[in-house]
Amino acid sequence: MAHSISIKAIKEHRNPFQADCWNGLSRPITKYEVTKAIQQGKLLKPDSRSSVWGAEYKRSEHIQKIAYFVVKGWKRTIHLDVGSPDIGYYVDWLVEDGNHRLAAAIYRKDETIKAFINGSLDEARELGLIPPKKPRPIASL
Image (cartoon, rainbow, N blue to C red; front, side, top):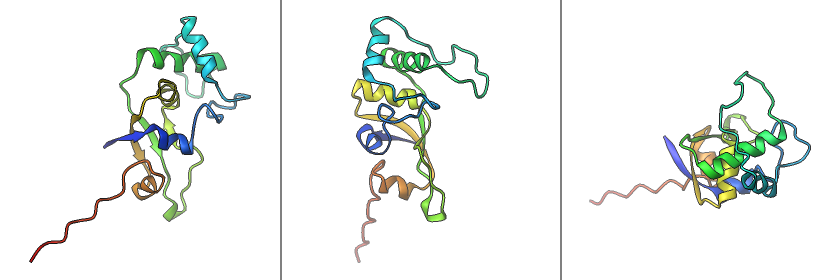
């Protein structure tokens, strides 16, 4: 089931504009770089390059993919993995698939993004990604 996740909540834990989630780039991508790509019409359509597994994107290609999503939008749901700390499974980066779309949503100042969540839903609640469980009503006598 896809959840509508608060962009603010995701940013509190992992923000692609403040960390290197782009396979070892020397520094995080900036919103200025995305703005410049949009102004120059440099939009890289998803899957427009070789889909060879492990192919590394250049910095400019990451920027242009984000720019594409800012301008054109997307339909695919992102995938988050929050881990399962109760069984000793931890993750370093929440986003399994969708860093470019998340960056575009942040750039556009969207309030939410659709995401599938892997791992413990209790951990997702603890991280503030999904609302707490509602208490069950007590049956009246």
